[in-house]
Length: 347
Image (cartoon, rainbow, N blue to C red; front, side, top):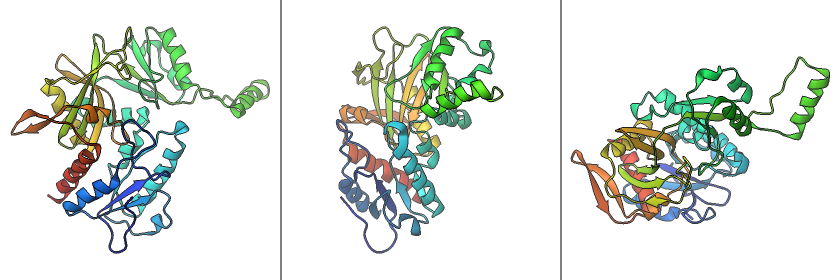
């Protein structure tokens, strides 16, 4: 592991977690990427890097003005460690550090509510579909008239992967049941307080459904979607067919790499990455009648199975999309994405 070096400030600071891991390698959530090779590649292009831990003593005492911080997130149950990472990142920003990608991108990780907010505030045509609504409680949802939605409609918990907790409501009564389930947030203290209020303080209420969630318009007629990874200017695409008798493709295991991908889909993926000014992005997107339907997108700590298993990638060169044969390496692609990002700042 590359450790902190003495001397002038680095151009780039990599932050590792409590296990000394950076991201995770395909096939093992306990094995991180090899930062030594990434640091060496960046050095070949003139960028000085250091590797520190989020919990490094005096990290927030130092002058970080202009240092690019390459960080990760966490997918621990309850997102406890992610909350700690958030604190450190905000502290580094106060010291002048430049987060790569920016804090909004971190906030959207395992947070489909904020992801929808990024979609809605982007005004990007490629992110216009499908329409989404966000809620903080079941009670918030009940304030909307029953005719506010067109059915069927998709219900999503704010956190989760591989379509966990995602369900389809066919009518308003079914929607209420699914929303109650998605937002359910009980604990013993809340249950006790609610019982007390019911007996003694009927003027007070306490929601037991405070897990935030997303409603998303349903796109009919789809047999699957695409997992698209954009590493700066390189696009990796995995076709995912729906599960049997199900509308969901994520986690289906029915995967294929198609050599002919709609160029409009590739255009949309690249424009979305460029819009958010991130080195890389992961998208769950469908293509129907010439329109991209972006269900979800992430910028940090996303799975790279699509990249590792792909026999080719796509690049936009000389005004057209070209397919480039050959397998890819996680460390190499991350290095090249960061180099592309950093050199774009120097241009």
